[in-house]
Image 1: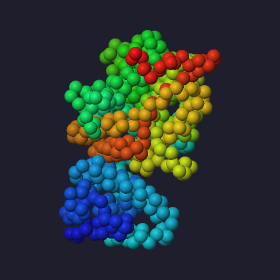
Image 2: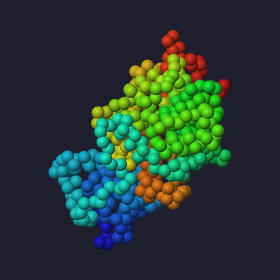
Image 3: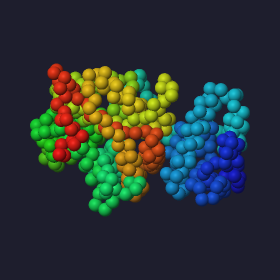
Image 4: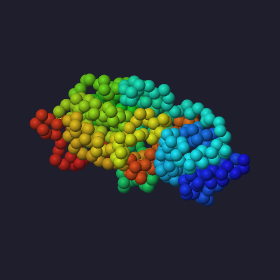
Length: 444
């Protein structure tokens, strides 16, 4: 076969009713599609068999992780084009094919065409990086521990290459006056500066003072704990389900000489019983909680705070769906990135915190900041690609490159957002302890 690319672009045109917006380079060396467009490289016909058996996002993801497809040129531009195909045609037609295979003639014709090009054999097993054998109800302690381990226990060396010296795995806080377009920091302002500013913003929103007890839920590699203890004199308890994170954090804390101020535990937040705390930070952790457990999460944190204590909940949010009952997590994210992770609309999160007894005092959207952060992480990964592959696996590095680049576009296009919610456990008198001009955050 010397015309695989032309046959594939013709088949896609027939299926979609419009020309394919990307160029295709096939395993036989053939190319077809609009000149100058991003090029989708199909290295092996196994990729097509994966699409036959799992139409839509998951089939494409498996082929990407296995290295059977790639992008030549601007990854962001290619994802912009392909995302429309996946969202507008992939999940819907994939579900139709599985549930009603005889109802859509286009799908039957596409399947026949792909079989002719790819061969009728079944695809190979999913890549090793795909999570398997999830057991029991969602968001039990056992299953959450497995999900967290899948995402975070992939090697501290790998994360150090991606995140940089700050070792902060959440949205940074960029200074508009010192930040260039698309995540290219201006002179003298780095990703580490932006992460430091984010941690400091949180400490100021929490009004941390010398001797305050801070609970850092989902403490990661210890960066928030170190910043709060070193800069504000807080006594910090950090909890994580990742043993690799905990070991790394404890080593850093010892090197900083802060072991008398910080304790890191491998512990589920639901098992913390040594309140009351003066403040709680939850930074990029609540996405793992899930809708069925979110009220329990809010109740637990409320109970752990003293009256007048503050919660800073830093969390990614999705846009509300027209039919919320049928919301589902993206197949690629669920299988390869954040197993069992769930995003909730901002309004639902604020309402649940209020139902638990909190008073919501401030909400700050920092959506654009996350796009800038993700582009820096992608650049770090690409710059250190060979080292990253050695630190984990080629498949895992490909997972992270794809998900971070696609996420950057989602934040830029307002498909998802990220918000810092400051909430207070009111005192018995009803007072909040908040200053009248709280948004100065201690800078006045």
